Length: 424
Ligand code: DMJ
Figure 1 (cartoon, protein in one colour):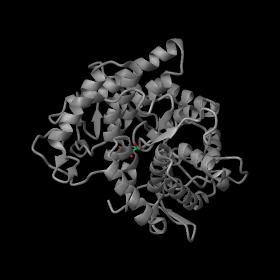
Figure 2 (figure 1 turned 90 degrees about the vertical axis):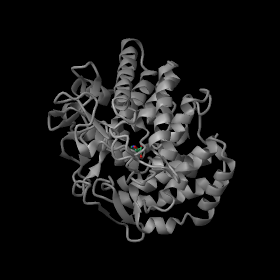
Figure 3 (figure 1 turned 135 degrees about the vertical axis):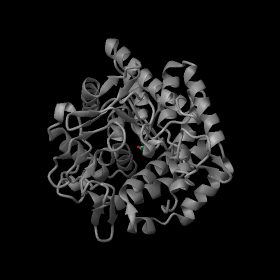
């Protein structure tokens, strides 16, 4: 996709975990010799570079090899100028130059707004950068907003008024108020919620602010967005200024796994209710796969005008090797050991082999409802980072990257839980 090294870096920890030693060494050499941080920094996507950091950090923790740590720290420092906005919140999908400290947004990023899933998906990585460098600049303790990025982001979010307890997807980096009231647990919002519960878990349950924000957000989602279709399928709708859009994006399917993970730490009725919700959402996402001709799910599916978990628009029929559904299968398997999750995962493996495998790798497909192949000629880097890793973990023993000891960042890069002290 024109981003040098995205696939190599995203694949590092997957290669390591799968014990593909030769390929891992080749990728490591590429990081040592050819990953040019200056080239990347000059015209970098903030969103992409933060993802590079997750892959490098995870590989450092898995292997103990210093090169991955030093590249992650170097990249982290290069990102800091992006926080020089009036609120300290980086602009949406910003391109920025570390030399001039200038940042600006892509046109599609809602005219200079910041995106919830972007500025809300930094916490895990920035905490590790601070721990590893001994420098609080990435995380907290510093007084200036631009010197305490993730602490400051929490502060802005806790002060801003939330419509019915929900978090809209676009925020002004200038005023710190919402730009438009579109709420979604899928694209643009998704990993913000994921990082709340995972920040709490990664802190060994000490970050109680994150847990409370997660609990409150989930309560608002349950109350306002969770719906049941006429055919009995549970889904999470989107919300536009108070009006529900009865659509669920493939991206929103990660929420089954997230809610199940969070439920483990609740008790009584609440735990049971959340486990049921997680299982129902995962089952709905499975339906979106089984109701297609390829047995792969569309980019978005709807529950209106007679449709039930199927795409109604031509533009929403594609599948780009996304991981969210198998991600939820992996969590639900590990947390319940119900064999259906492994069966469902195996259905995906077979469908990928049949419809997405091409001579040089795997490709997205343009229409999940057609068995005449129309490949998009693109292997997204998250296919190696997430889709294949989650499938692999689904069929591993539970102690391979145990959920007791690791949290997976939003790109499935495992980061250790701070049981006592990360450095120890
Ligand atoms: C991944 O890049 C990340 O999981 C992100 O948070 C949302 N989903 C894409 C892959 O679909």
